[in-house]
Length: 622
Image (cartoon, rainbow, N blue to C red; front, side, top):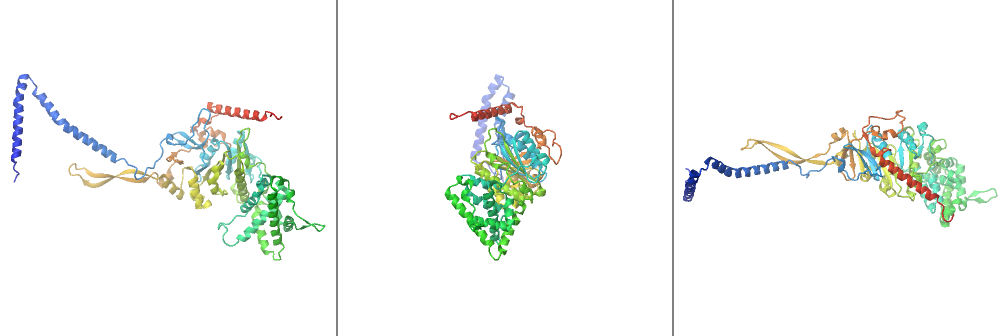
């Protein structure tokens, strides 16, 4: 039964009808006698009646549309990872000025523009075999980074390409070519005596206090601890073997000075009579023909004027006690124990004997590493290249490790701490660079910059341990991962480092709405990796992690495609001709005829001329 209207509702309806009738009755005369167009007014009335509701519904639908569009935009709650889209989004880049071409470290191309930055303390470049670590980064950086450099090259071609180029550019180049590889291109090898760092202690004020520490470290370099870090059997024998190495070497230095070599120390150990003779001479037991005893006159050495009397007396006492312990061991009835000590020392030093390339290259020093920290009046850069080949890497292993240790000591002890030196350490997973892990933590204090090239993170971990890998990843301010990455640990690291990005996922319910008959759906915010491991493996771009910036996908052209660097490098012995390709990029800031370069070179020449004239000017005392 239908609901009946109430009295109030009937009253309201009657009032509406009466009101409408009154309005019509009052409006008919004007319309009839005044000539008003009823149709126009009716249209206006309909519009006035219809527009507000239509406008209201339109605004509501527009707001609803904006809500739907906003719902499709991720808020970033699930991740905000991503790459920079322009070089202007990167902070900390070097920009050339009129007087400074902004020479800096090169990190690839982004949107057709080269990325140059100040060189940080530690940089890391990861690239598998064939990815172009040399041609796409190292070779370009050797030209773009100014200042003194140390280049470790165990391929051989880098030294050939750049020693010639740097000499042509009037730089001072020292090539320590231990195995004389490519001697026709590199010329005669430089030489370096590892005992010079110890000889320096005697002539440096107060340096005699460092003699024992340097000799001990040198002995540990020659006879290192096994992988068990000295635990287990044999530690006692190794300590005595190192003591014999230390004694024979310091004895040679005290007697012959700068002419002493490690090969001479080995020769003393191989001759038991000579070893006993010098041990007795050290402790004052060497009998003379007249029945008296002789002792090495340390107090009469020419270097005592640089040391205090107390330090000289203490050193003489230490040296005598060392000789006493060795002489007593050699006089025991049972010589089997001492034979073990001696055979261990001789065995570890055998690669340094007089018939080896190592001895030939370490008889005398034709250069010193501390020259890298010296201020030169002529303004010329010093480049030291240590090169060799894989064929003799293990035969010369001791030579390279001793060179490494002595080089770091010379740089650390130089008073000129602010002078920048750049190390190019390539293939250091194949050849272990001594003290690299600790060097990464304190190199900034001595203005030593490290550019480290490795094949994979897993290879570095095997060579330097998990702790070494953690230090590398935390200390490296710039990391560049070249294309063709395929090592699982490296792919996993990159995937995690790039992080996740948020996206709106559209899910369908399969049901239809009653009023619109449309399938219902909803949006939900989800996360997805910026790059999956497969995408990283297949990408043709390098992945640059530059400080606190967002990652960048950079293009890495070969040096053969970059002007003017491609014309500066020398010829690789492996190709026999210049490595040239079609030019892709021209870095104008390095063209010698550019106005900014000419002005900068002119200012530098005026400064050198002023400094030279100032040094030649006679003083008032003259």
